[in-house]
Image (tube, rainbow, N blue to C red):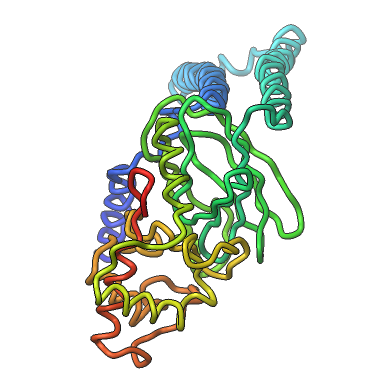
Length: 342
């Protein structure tokens, strides 16, 4: 009975893995790089299908022909061992299949590698992986963000990857392949998104307790929307704050600014030990785990370790009064970039 329940639960979980409302599908590419990789996947599947079908047909044929039945011993007794023509044939066929697969794989790998090295006209983003969040720095634009990577459509993007602690791996299935982020080393990855939308990404290297929660999103938008977002992130200060939001801003300056950067309050945001919150209210999720709303933000402030195991965020359950938490939440919910304003 217990085995049956476990089997049903396993099948249910496998079924549920395909039910995410957010796309995370290598078979639905949204960049030239991902399309190239998908063509190699199609070629591999076609070759493997030929092998699978051939082996299955031969296996079934021999299973029926040489099954145990009256007279079968006489039939097998007259067989002669060894056939050089057949042995040469089934030795050459696997070699031929490997050559057919290897040639386009090597050519495409070389082509993608050359594209990654060429930076002319590309948007360069320095990506730093942390346990367990992602930092995105736009050096030419002077902007740093976290959790959501903004890029313009139809423009080449070069990702310069590194890590602040352990080995991570940057992976956005619909935009490109995986690339490791190693401490003290820079790896590069490039892609040119060809359709606007929000695409899911994650860390593809087991990196600690919070590895499963180390997700992010890539927002591919029009060039004007991207420029507007950049300008909004550069705004020096929040404007037209309510009294409660101003009090929350003071709490943030005194208690949070040493770890969390916001573009307006602290222009030296690169290298902060915690995610940048300049467009916090625009994020879909808190710490990429909970839906972004006031109730969940209070839950996160009270019990961050319970929400995201391994997170370095301390609990503020006893440090703030309920009124102070409400003021801080009011301020954080005002950090929203829209049409060039924040």
